[in-house]
Image (cartoon, rainbow, N blue to C red):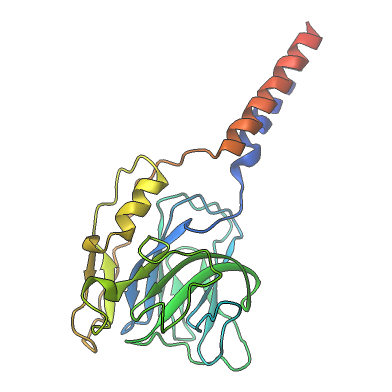
Length: 255
């Protein structure tokens, strides 16, 4: 009986911190399609069951979103989603919008009713929040315009030129605003999430439409999973050591 108790304590100690809130850069966009009104993103950390991520193409001004466009929310569902999973958000502008993993639904906000993704000057933000209009942690952003003119990064903690803030126009000049773009680089194996972030933030690894208003509606984004080694956070090691120490102390007391 005592051995079973020790085993349970060890499991609790090593698994206690497996569930953690997402932070900036824990997802990254992998596709943008203004013609199909679709997006795709990859999880670069495990996503807990029941996690809600908001998406908006309203412009952020540094302190708040403006109005006129849309808010959607994605729920990860009943099971944890493993790092490396690619999630496709399809028919983003329709009432029948869908997700390849989890569920996608509209959020009704007064003054924001245009759910389509524009073929130019469009920025989409992904974030956690207490509501769709009250972000607490920005996770990622993507634009086919510029962050200077089409939605600010001020106050978001996101950095242009990295995987958490991808400016598609940077590859071919700001005069070209693509309808469609997709990450087409390596999908692993990556030794860490940081290694995957470097690849995702390199626009040389992206296929980007060079013709605005081309027809890309029928293109289905690549949802092949990334192979990403998840390295435990320092806090995880600390909790594991503390838990194992507790087990050792209990064993000595028993002896």
